Amino acid sequence: MAWKAPGALADNDCQLWLWTTNSHLHHAFHLLETWGFTYKTMATWCKSQFGLGYWLRGQTEHVLLGIKGHPRSRLTGPHGAIGSHHSTLIMAPRTRHSEKPECFLDMVETISEPPRIELFARRGRLGWDVWGHEI
Image 1 (cartoon, rainbow, N blue to C red):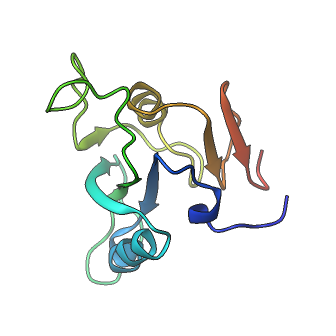
Image 2 (cartoon, rainbow, N blue to C red; image 1 turned 90 degrees about the vertical axis):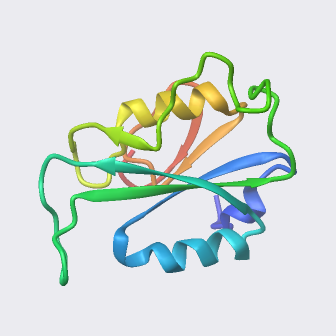
Image 3 (cartoon, rainbow, N blue to C red; image 1 turned 45 degrees about the vertical axis):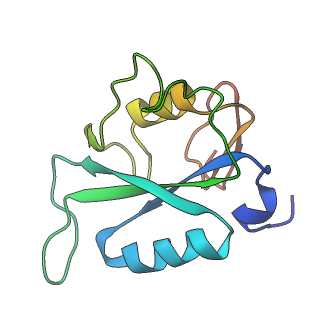
């Protein structure tokens, strides 16, 4: 498969979950806009170990939620999914390099519609298309 920017892969009504680190937040917001998505909210993954950092040692990673169109079929009611208790704080241990926590993927499945694709994936997941050199 030839590389395409996520905006070119996206349906008219869809979500984009874009992971970024503290030092790249500014660029991540610009990417969302460039790819044609509207920023909605952000979740932060609190890790149990320190990472790298120049000013402060990183212990968090962020995921920005952007949307195109009106992807609300699973979000009933004015405040999102009924019975959903998803937080903007993700508490999960680190695993392999760049591998995202299982609870995050569970959350995405709860509030998004298939088809789903993970770019730069570290492992496969049932019901998802995955793209990456480490599969």
